[in-house]
Image 1 (cartoon, helix red, strand yellow):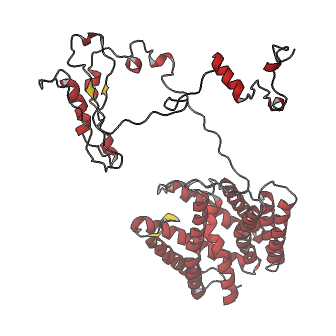
Image 2 (cartoon, rainbow, N blue to C red):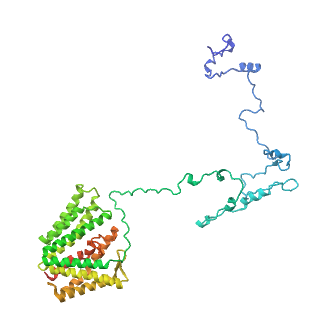
Image 3 (cartoon, rainbow, N blue to C red):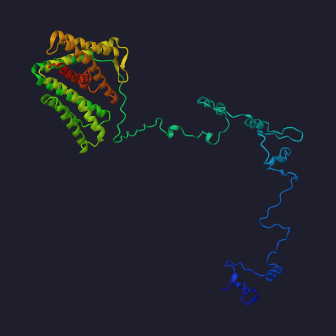
Amino acid sequence: MSRWDDEDDEDAKPPASTRGLENTEGVRIIGAEEAAEAVEKGTVAPRRGEGELRFGDRPASPPEDAPTPAVRFPLPADEAAEPERFRPRPAPPLPHWTEPPTGEVPRILPDNDDTGVTSGGDEDLEAWSSFATSGPRWRDSAGDWAEPDYDADAIRADDSTRLGALDDRDRPAPGDFFFEEPPPVEEPPPVIRTGVRPTPPAPPAASTDRDMPMAIGIGVGLAALFLLLLSVGPGAVMVLVTAVLVLAAAELFGGLQRGGYHPATLLGLVSVASLVGAAYWKGETALPLVMGLATIFSLLWFLVGATKQPPTMNAAVTVFGVAYVGLLGAFAALILQLPNGRGILIGVVVAVVANDVGALVIGRQAGRAPLAPNISPNKTIEGTIGGSLASILASFVVLGLIGVHPWDSGSAIALGLVVAVAAPLGDLCESMIKRDLGLKDMGTVLPGHGGILDRFDALLFCLPATYYLCRILDIF
């Protein structure tokens, strides 16, 4: 169908010169004659005059001296009863935007009629004016928040009908939805990262309570066993020495595990026993060989994956345990290898025991100044001095005067001096290790003494010192 309704009306068709300008949306450009004819017929709106408003025109601003129009608000139904109160009032003049601010605080003014009498609203004025006249309240400390800005008692005592969130008449009791006691929350297990040593627990508080009868009984029993094996021969004493050192090493490796390390315990115990046996059968030259092999096999232990733990730190503590207990303790085997080894070993044991007893007795009776409070709070300077004097005196009396071959008075005093220095250092070093691992005692094998290592820690330092003292003094 053609877009032209009247096909016969040739005048209604667009001229040939304008047919190419047709708009696809139904808009057609016409000439002036055709537009005039359409205006005469009244089919289109005539052009607006010069003074008439068009779409988009904005009215002119009123003159500056024009009166301000009155502002009226919706009036209530009882406007007829109070016409003065609700009559329209002119809007207050506003300052020009370029004028500086006056700093005046907004105020609420009462509604006055023509006679100057306030027509109600006194209560509202008093309530709202309190907000305009009150200043800010500063809260500088936690105590300033204790007092609220409102009267809580007045709100609680208000008997008026409460609405919304304040209406608690139909509110259920807390027990209808919640437990009176919330269930315990299970804490997740601590995450331990591989290669990171956890922080050791704080060691228990030092206690001065000690079962002295039990400690004395255990000490006497050990001394009797030692003398009995000495009477049998050096081989029997070697069995006791090896057993003591292996048990002490086991306690040390166990303490290291409780402190977060993972040493090669089995390898360490075998190395300690090997050091003692090699020193007794092959002498002093066997010690470097066994220690070297212990170091190599400690590294290989972690290299082959026998333990899935960080190798550097754990191999280091393994070698440390072997050297601390095995290497130092192997000097007991070197002493027994000497011609008069049993007498020399008796002298070391007598001096060390005297040092421990003297430090304990003097420290309890007159100890005041702590020797190393951050390492061993129970050790005092007075106790250390008392132990040193006791070791010198006991060595001189037992070894020099009573006589234990090969000691004489001079060498016995020299032994007492060496033990007076080495024994407290060995005791403090073992206490330092326990403090670092968060332990009070390395073990509980010996009641009243703690563990094996707790009892023989001073002897580990005194054995090498005595061995080289005898080499220097030619006491064999």
